[in-house]
Image (tube, rainbow, N blue to C red; front, top):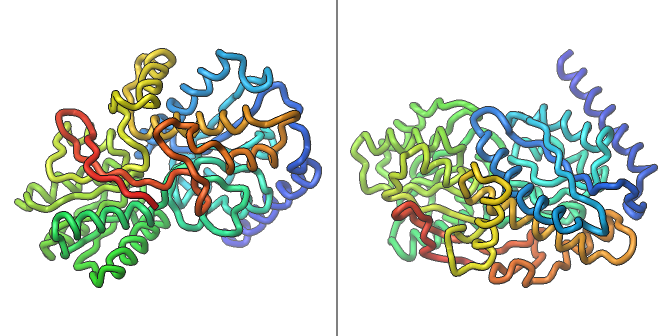
Length: 387
C-alpha cells in the first residue's frame, strides 16, 4: 500500500508540473517584479553546514546585485526550503517551488540522492536547474538541456586524486569510505573507473548510512587491509570521526582524500585544524588567495553582508555561481525568459570570473579540479587539473 500511494503521489505531482508548464512555456515573458530563484537544501541535520553556506554565499552576491539596481530593475529573491538531506522532502519542496512559488529557476540544490529524486520533475518541467551542489554523472547527459552545472564532476575529482597519488606519491593501495546511497555510489564508480584506467583496483571499502555516524564496521574493514590512501565520499561529521578513529589505530602514514562535497572547512573545524596527511579535492580555487580578484571581492562582500559568517569553500563556490547567474541575466536583451537565460548561461563569457575560466562543456561551466593541503589555517593549492 505504501508503494502504491507513493506512485500515485509521484504521478499526481508530475501531472501538476506538466500542466503548469503547458501554460507557462519557456519563451513566456517573466512578468514578476522580482526574479525568484528557489532551492531545496539541508538547513538542519548533519549536512546543515552545506545548505547554510550555500545560502550565505549566493545571497551575498544577490544582495550585492540588488543594491546596485538588480536586473532590468528587478531584484533577485532567493527562497529556500529545508529538506534535511532527505529525498522525499526534496520532492515535496520542489513541487512547492515550481507550482506554488512559481520560481523562475531552481538554484543551489544540494546532494546526489536528493537531486536524483526530483530529476524526472526537472526534466519534464524543463525549468532551469542551475548550479546544484553535486558532481553526479546523471546531471551531465544529453537529456538534461535545462540543467547547467557550475562545478566539476565527481568523475573529474576522483580522476585528479588518483592521478596525483599514483604519479606524485607512487601509491597503488587504495581504499574507499563512502556513504551508502546514490552519492556514495557515484564516488565509488568514479574511483573504480579512475583506478581501472591505471590498471589498479580497490583493496578495501567501507560504508556508512546517510545522516548517521555509524562508521565502526567501515573502519575495521578498511584498516585491516592496510591501504596507503583512503578516498572519502561522505559528509563531514562521519568523515571526521572516521579519520580520527583510523589515526587512533596508529595508521599515521595513510593519506586521507575527501572530495569537495565533504565540506573541507567544516571538516577542518571538526578536526580542530589538524590537517596532516589530508589531501583535499576542490572544484574552486582557495578563497584566501589574495592575488585573486574574485577571492578578494568575495571576502569583502561577505564581511559586509554577513559579518558574522566565516568564509568557506562552499559559500565561495555559491558566490561564484551566483555571480555567473547574474552575468547571464544581465546579458539578456529585451524581455527575460527562461530560454534566453539558459542560452546566455551556456554562452557566458569565459572571463566572467576573471582568472577562473568558464566554458560550458559536458553540461558544466567549471572544468578544473584543485588539490590542496591545509597548512597554517589555509588551503594551499598544490596541483591543478584541467578537464
